[in-house]
Length: 179
Image (cartoon, rainbow, N blue to C red; front, side, top):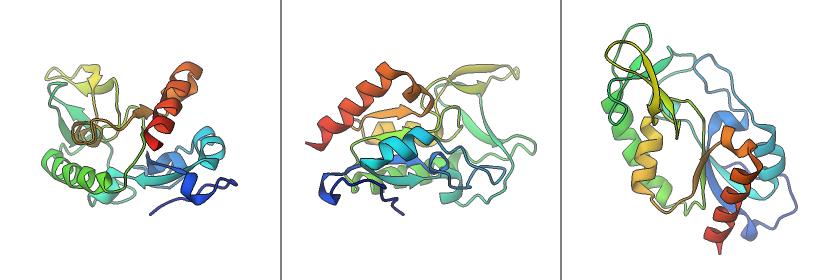
């Protein structure tokens, strides 16, 4: 499902970037909510065509659903439900690898991930170690597989795009890739 921007930029000049669906206002979060980002939707959205992705929903988890967390070693954590400890690592990893290959065909010029998400967080995602203490050293399962498969696609988290320098760098990268 693609989201067309609300601007006057001609279709053939729009930059196609992937995005965590909740950032566009899609009600796909664990509690049925969203985290719509006004900058991404109202400003950047005028110039891009978004390809929304929600790893949890797309791999078959419902809305609402039990929250998920990363557990184990930050380099290779398990994705488990918070209360019942059901391990979804293999399911999410298999889906993420398949989805990354599908997204390659979209010729994306960038991807904006949801910060702190156990599936889509790009940097410093909390991972509970074996003693139950969280370490902000992880990466979401989908974000990890996406960046492994699509090495040259610029990626960023929505929270970091509020930093003017990081935002400028990301935008320069996606425009450069478009050419």
